[in-house]
Image (tube, rainbow, N blue to C red; front, top):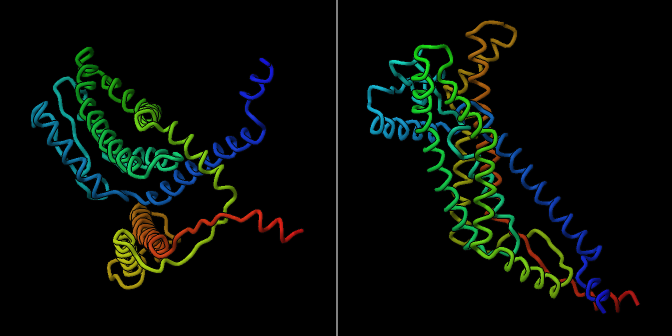
Length: 319
């Protein structure tokens, strides 16, 4: 009797296969999301408006906490006000830190949003609330991380004033957070959300529904009518596609950069290097706007239909 109970508790080969397929699917989705994000943000300063906003908030909070004389905002290589210049009597020299597209926390928000979005069985409303809560929390943590950098540098240099590299504690903390810290926070945050939202219970109920429903057939179909959200996505998609198309085909400044870049293809110089890099960024951003807009148009106008397969009818037809 005990052996029978033990066997009933063991996981079946079919259940194990389904779990392995699910985990592989999660990995594929996360890797795909990472690839798409890296591709979309490959051009320099692709999140420039967020970088500028973060730099301004960082500067304002830093000035309130440590005094306006300890920091200044200067322009980056590409003319954006995204570089903060730290100053302190114990520093060997001024310290410059640039708010790049990897420093604004968007990458982390996208990653945790994917984790929440692919959690099976959890209602959409809980997922949306979880994504909003995690996005706000990660942005607050990221800003706190930026604010901690200055006192870490001061602490290191007060122990050895004017020494080369005395601000190393700041860089060590910065590197740790980018390499490991945010990933640990993302996993911990997702686990907390999953437990609080009863993700395990939703998953069990979802599995029971899938077992009752049986096999299904999926196909893409054009939406007969558009909801307000679909209309909003369609409008944003058309706007992005139009902006990208205009930049590539009609914008005079972009055309001038293209002509100068074409003239620099066989020339090795600093000026030509900058021109080639600038045209790559302009054309890259425009192409991404065009493709992202087309994707949004597709999402807004096409839906996935799921229909249950009548296995009894199929069996009778075969007989």
